[in-house]
Length: 160
Image (tube, rainbow, N blue to C red):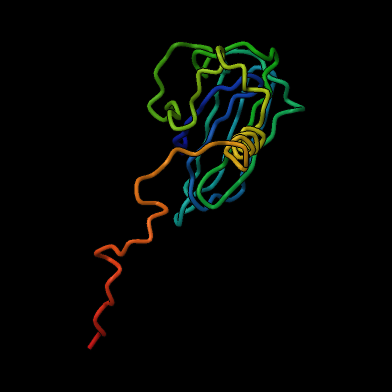
């Protein structure tokens, strides 16, 4: 039995942990106020994984959840105190060789006022701001309205 490798990242109201176990079976995630326990069988050889994490700060076990995919198990931990940054996942400052920061999803949200908008809302807002205004004067492009033949207007030879 050994711990599953995991990546984590912090958000304003949640902490996310992804346990990287392919083809996991018998997944068991136990959320406690200050502790997370994860276990499963993984891979073709049904290797037993067990992770016990004493958390940096408290969570709301009733509002925390997990989702299993073919490649991993993602845990969404609802923070006990929203808006408080977690500088690390664990209570102790020990370096765990199976745990790393998920820099692809990491975000310095403390200075971000757009956090309340979901990604979809931000995308919709961006698309709405991208155009469609008929009153906007577009800059002139040389030759855009020119009907003179260009060198690329010649007939292409037939393919043989």
